[in-house]
Figure 1 (cartoon, rainbow, N blue to C red):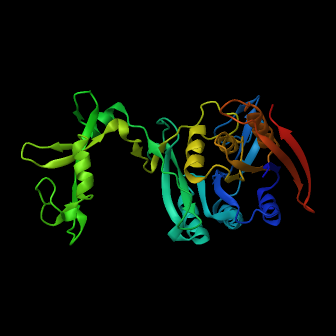
Figure 2: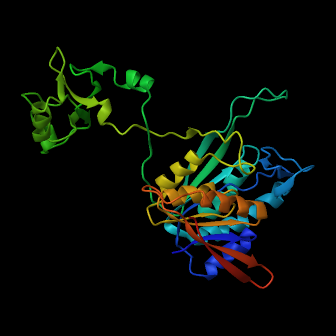
Figure 3: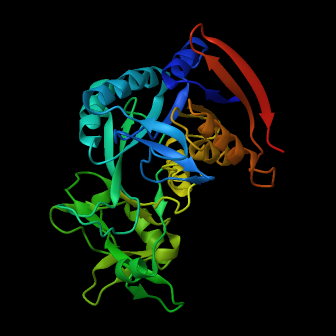
Length: 357
């Protein structure tokens, strides 16, 4: 498929996609909609504001809807996004702490509470010293839902820090490799199975069974992967350098760029993580509030197809600039995409073909 950059009000663009064969074809949606702040976000002399500012500069986008009007605005678009999602699809909605809990209730209705996966806390900045009644706010949140119970999921792992290794793998072998040990038995007894047979003349403790068959235990012992305690208790050796890292939890630290190209531009590593975790190569990734195109760039650099939508002239320009900066290399493919200008009154449109050189 061709990558698409659609310059349009997003509800019209989503209906356009439904009418042009994309129903059930999108594997991943990431959106960072307005946060119901009641202000405008601007770019002044090429510098983007990171807080709402309606007095000067060119308006990149307006965030004027609040309360129930904002929730309804979002609900209408989420209903269309649900139709576009594949059965293995996921949606990540980035929102702030003031409105996020109301959005969560609405998303439970649209996607089903059984398909809610995470309320991810995202550390977005350094601690603040604003004088106000209340604690400093350094976070926003990402609501993660799936279309079904069988989504695309590539388990993300976080590299161990030096402190993690010292804590989790406190032992060191003769070669200086850090390791820990775990029991080779687990709760529950088995009858007439291979996991309750004697190993080196030892039976599992009462009420437990071996984690694997005795032949595997013998092979581990032959390879030096069983550590025997002074009282003859066997434990499995786990080396730090053979582990992929620790499982990611639901508190992420991905701080926003200090000098963004576009208001509220998000951290590129954040988008790379989401794209790699919840889509496959050749999947279609959709962002219908695409801003400066960070999601689209992450999709492009990870071998995914993408569709970006924004109604802002400044957003489309910023996205084209960001995508145009991706050069053909051994590791990156220069983006090939069409820009579609939708005229919403009668659904006419113009297309422009672009290839980054």
